[in-house]
Length: 68
Image (cartoon, rainbow, N blue to C red; front, side, top):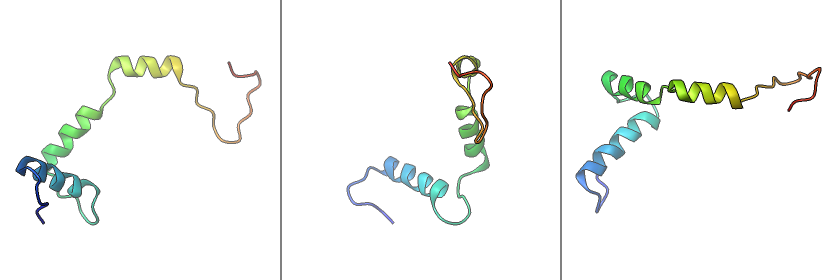
């Protein structure tokens, strides 16, 4: 299905996105999926910042001491 007025490169991008989020099996190649996984992997800086800033509170858990 071509979208009127859309640049051919944009049509390829649209087709790739439909392959990721559309119904049924993914139409994305294995190498594209692996590249996306690597691009989304957090950096050491991301992990350090999360370790410093993120507080995980489990549902129903009550702390002994007040949270910061």
